[in-house]
Image (cartoon, rainbow, N blue to C red; front, side, top):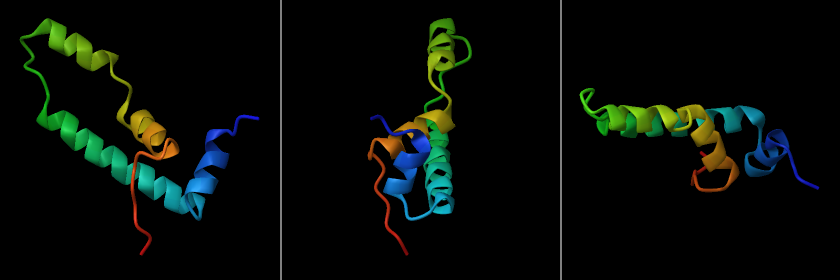
Length: 74
């Protein structure tokens, strides 16, 4: 049976609060990377590609759920 996102986060993190913080911090890092590589506004195909990308928070949540984000408990 497939686990939903909440159950997967519960298995990944010790609490939902920790999971929310982890996803939020990762989303901030992803957003910074996107801002740094932002395409020129004059190139319509580059802008179109940017619009097709998933939202930062969705990408961050997906990365955490798939175990691509390493973190250390303090």
